[in-house]
Length: 355
Image (cartoon, rainbow, N blue to C red; front, side, top):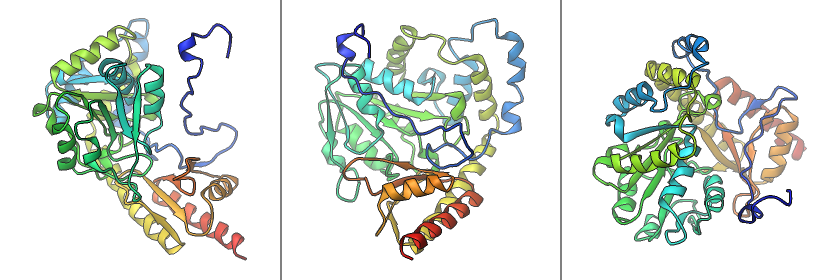
């Protein structure tokens, strides 16, 4: 860090993204990407954009916002396209938090919330999950703060029901509640239908998981028109051309092939159920995941050892160092074939440990 950095950022600890190694081929089960590429139909219109790259993209994302709004059953002024859902989360910390309006979120959740709070100078409180890693919704009632909840939560994969989400929103009428639905398509219930009932609800979604576009960086905010207007103030004050033309074209193509997305979600859910059953046979215990990943630990082998051994054998998973979760690994659900290889490698590790 240089001597020129602003004093307010001197102690900022940046977010650490999952490994993206370039040195060898791995089975990547560490960053919750889709194992399936975008469909041919989805990418067919992208090449037409190349000849128009001398022009700025549409700052209103008109076609993309209209298609997404129609798909989820809201008006186009109730959605906002962003450069990955991380951007809308950062905007939410900027727009709806401050020194007098703090933030609250679980102690075990998406690590970027804490970074966004620090980056924006927002005081925050982390509310402990229960011993079963579940959110106790009453802990968030009358929070007198902006509430951030990933649903399903990460890295646990545990989901709140729509009724539980509504209770949190209803019991914070004077503060915004942000529901981060990055993984909702794998077994969760979306809170989008509640935005017409509650003016303090912001839902965020991403194309990085179920819609196979992590490399394109595309997400959405969904809320009442006034909240979206607030967030657009943040966007037009920082990066009005936040979605490049190629990503915009890809996003529209993905929305035109929703059947492909649904089929892939079904395959991932089936693969998750398969690998959960196999892991139990090997002595693993895990949370009840409604996401495209599994949060699991072995009864007799440390999480760090399993992570390192799998990496040696060509499989990447995500390990966290937090005291409560250090024996767990988060395992992205890949294809059925990839999951079969994973089980085979875990059997090797267990045999090596107890030979």
